[in-house]
Length: 156
Image (tube, rainbow, N blue to C red):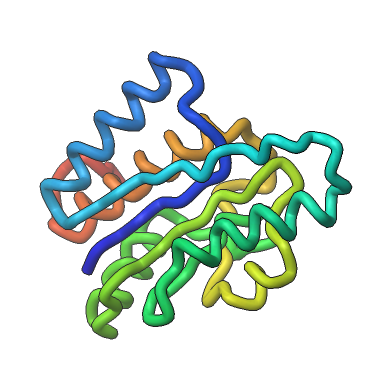
């Protein structure tokens, strides 16, 4: 199984981006993992709905029909680290070829993206900047891999 993280934005803080890249390298030890940015829209005079719609179209162009799509969304289900690891394992057992996680833009996802999503996960009920969301997600994915392999990174 391959995992991909798609997000609206750009690289931000060099030190936090380095931390994300560090986790990406660690995750690749367990399975193929890719992070891809979809650049911010250039027209800042769009309405919120139009911005979400255009960002949604950009997301949908990057998603394949067979992908299992997980929206990282405040309205999603909150999981423990162990439950998240189990979720990843379930996708592997089901034969999911590519598991794609999405981080939306400043205003969230369009209705089209919500309709395409297969599952929603909330990393927290709090709102974080995109770079922190990427870092938290990457760390939790690495933690999920170590839980799956029974490695000592996660202490219960």
